[in-house]
Amino acid sequence: MRSAFPAIWHLRLKVGPDALPLFEEVFETFAESVTMFMEDKSGISDGDCDWFLEGYSRTPPERVKIVSALSAVAAAHGIDVPALDIEQLDNIDWVLENLRDFPPIDAGRFFVRGSHWHGRVPVGRTELLVDAGTAFGSGEHATTKGCLMMLDRLAKRRRFMKPLDLGSGSGILGIAMAKMWAVDVLATDIDPAAVKVAAINARLNGVASRFTSVLSDGYRNPALKKGRPFDIIVANILAKPLMRMAKDLAAHLAPDGVAVLSGLLDWQERMVMGTHERQGLRLKDRVVRDGWATLLIGR
Image 1: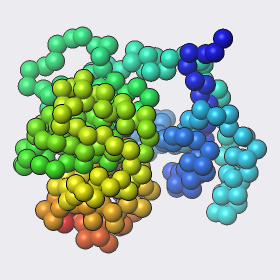
Image 2 (image 1 turned 135 degrees about the horizontal axis):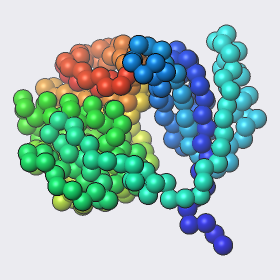
Image 3 (image 1 turned 45 degrees about the vertical axis):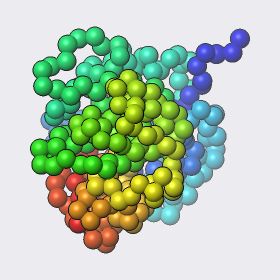
Image 4 (image 1 turned 45 degrees about the horizontal axis):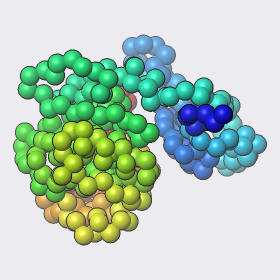
C-alpha cells in the first residue's frame, strides 16, 4: 500500500558561522530546501552559540557524494570537514504535527494564526490566517516576524500602491500588504507548491481578488517586468540570493520606493548591504530578532 505522505530526508551539519555560506552551497546542490539556525548554549545570549545548517530532500541523499563535496570545500578553505547527519523522517503528516505546535503570533499590528486555532483575535489587530502547507512561512520564524514588524512601521508613514512579495512562501507578507493597504499585490516563488499555497491562503483571508501568485525564479517572470516599478518590494529569502538579485531589485524598484530584505543573519548584513549600495540603495531602518536581520533600504 502506498504511503499517504512522501518520504523526507533530513540533512544536518554543525558548523562555525564563518563557514555557513561555504557549506550552504553544497546543501543547495543536494537538498530541495535549506535553512540555518542558531542554538544559544548559555541561555543568556552571550555569544556562546552553536550554528547548524539543515536541508530537506524528497529523494534519498547520496552520502558519499555529499561528503565528497563537503571535503572539497573544507580542503579549499583549510577548515575541518563537519560531520554529516542524515535521517529519514517518520512517515507522518508533518504539516499537521507543526500546526499542533503553532500558537498565534503577535507581530506589530498583525495577529497570525492557523485554521486550527479558534480563539478571539485581539481588538485592533489585523488577522492573518495562514496555514503553511508545503510552503515555508507560517509566521513563527524571526525573519517573518521582522518583516511584519517592518511593514507595521512603514504603514504609520505611508500607503504603498504597488507591492511585490518576492519569494512569498505561504504568502503571509503579501497577504499582510493586501489587507493593510487594500491594494493589488504580486507574489512570486520559485516553488510551484508555494505558489499554490499562497493563492489558497489569499482566499482564506478574503484578498484573492487583490492577490496574484506566480511562479518565478527571481525576477524572471514577465509579470514582474510588466508590473514594475514597484514602490515596495519585500524579499524574505536568504543572503546569497539577495546579493545575486541586487541589480534586478534596483531595476524593479520605483525611484521613491523601498525594499524590505530578510532571511539574513545579522553578521551577513554588511555583505548584503555592500551589493545593494553599489546599486545606489542605502539602509534606512532595521529590525534584529534572535540573530536574524530585517533591513529597510531605498535610494
